[in-house]
Image 1 (tube, helix red, strand yellow):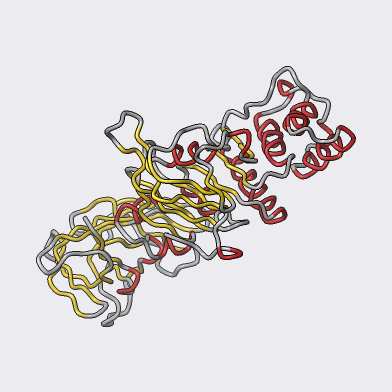
Image 2 (cartoon, rainbow, N blue to C red):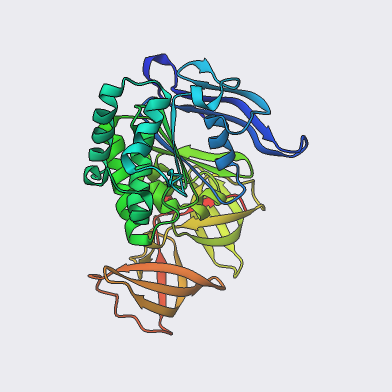
Length: 366
């Protein structure tokens, strides 16, 4: 799993990296990952998937069991954390409570023996970046959670590190502030061009900010791709289920011809789908179809397989109506109907035909 890199080499490289805490069970399994200079890569996955362990090994807070990590072409397994020139942002801010905002930002510069004459200049530049320059003399206890997180971000950037690592930095913020900070971090990254490795279990956060996302499960990267590629073209059922809302239908593969698989669902109905990650004929498969790709009462055509559905619930959500339906014996099939659609005037109990383009329905592993 590699990426295009500048000057022929990645800025960060995980080369066959493994991690075990007990000498037996691997929590990270043979990780190979290249990150280009200036890239924003998010490690995304559920709790226990290995993403935070990878970040901590990159920071130097966890030792590598096997393999090697490289930074700017140099192996860093044996390099202590304070000599890696890496900025860190944590969920709990980790600000020094007895220091002012300005002193918190000056601290990493003083540790690096930066000329005292320019420390203040660096501090004010970093605070201005996060729109907190008027708070230089405040104590952390006088700041809200969102303000403290801005200061923590500024402190990670103040010494102009070659890499910034962020571990669930917005997890403690409320929804509105978290979304606002996502855009702020994205814009700061774009303006500075610094390399960022970000860890989260929040898929909307990853989709919003990242150039690429590495989806982790059970210590293995399941797929590494751009947000749009992950959402539109998941490689397996784990990625399809974890990234965005997704309808899943279980069936058996009848036949595969070119880019079309015919599948018999559990209730006996037959549909066609794009074969992506399946076994041969007679093998089970899990179909994946996004709610916004489903059409109601579509015109009959070879490229648009249809199924019967029964409306179970309708929820008005402003720009669209969320329709929960019973399809192929499953009661959680979701259709998103745009608010300007002609057929949004449905009622609970209505029988409708559902359809989608064959290419929008992916036949994946079970």
